[in-house]
Image 1 (tube, rainbow, N blue to C red):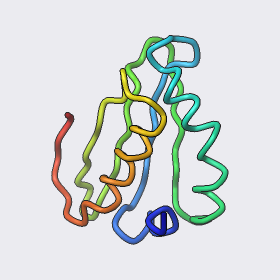
Image 2: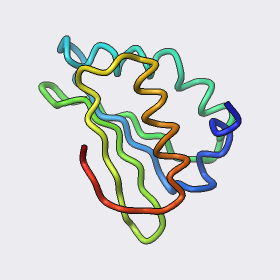
Image 3: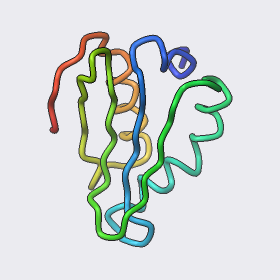
Image 4: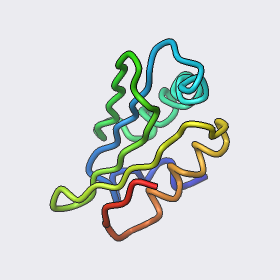
Length: 100
């Protein structure tokens, strides 16, 4: 999982959005609880923003060069699937906008 230490190589910022209480955000909350410390330790100066808002759909957004962003909806994904989605965002290497 060497890509985990390379977040800033392809990304400028990472944002994770979820609701503090909704069942649809449970896996996103769990992902943050299990992975934030490790990701931040490996990338101490890289901005990883956690945004909690009541009723929001869980999402992960990656910002690339020149302000280009790509987002992925996390509802219905398991924690390992969220980790894979993050890996795909990091390894993309080319920016484009898509909310899938």
